[in-house]
Image (tube, rainbow, N blue to C red; front, side, top):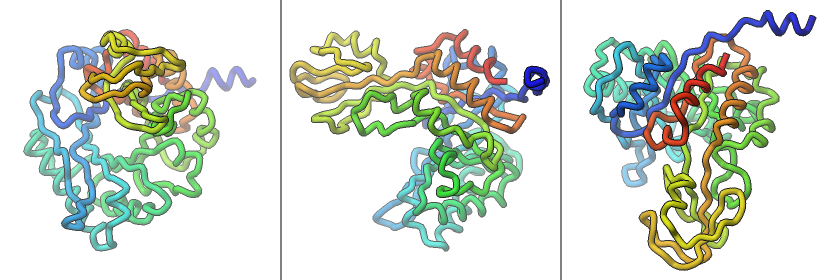
Length: 333
């Protein structure tokens, strides 16, 4: 009987998507091919960041998106706005309302002037913020105001906000986007992969199927290097793979868990490195992505699901073949 029930469970209705997190929207030939091959019709594009300006004591928009490539035919662009916790912690009640108005206005302007999307209003909008207990009130108030200005408002949800939802609260939006990455503290030089670690993932998803908000899912393709000095975080080096690092012929000693120690002072990778500095490479093995995508999609209870990859960028895609990208989209059902 249990086997029969499992077999009769309907497959999820999955929409494939990508995130685009660079300031200039420009697609390479490979990116275009991947979109076409996987029938991706949704791209979440970061329109701008919102940060706090200590001089004017106001929130300001930074890193506004520009566009050098046309939008692929039939593709829907969903604007994403990233908001820092510093902004939320400084806002007054009146500024929360004003910020909601300014975000909606700026998003609409960019949709029209940059992307040529002339439909009235904002059909969809996503807000990205790792809110905390202390910023929850202002953040949820901001979302409530924005929700009245769009027919579909979503917010990114971190794993800890799933597990501890009674503390962090559930944002007042139409849908959540579960970010299945940035799982550990990258400031600490440890053995865990801070981008994605299957062992860490399993500690946070017991309550996932009971989360009181429809969820979509995004998995990581990106990689980076992290430099530590005296066991303290020093630098991020985005898009640094282990292959790239070893190809530099630097004076390195291999430690464990993709960590390498400098054997003498040197200048490389655009930074000054000292003897004893440790470079940790964090990449996500394809098998981990495949198994994690299947596991999480089954744990999410809603039938309609957008499955996205972060993000559409030549460096992020460099570690995976076109066939592997297609497998990721196919495994989610």
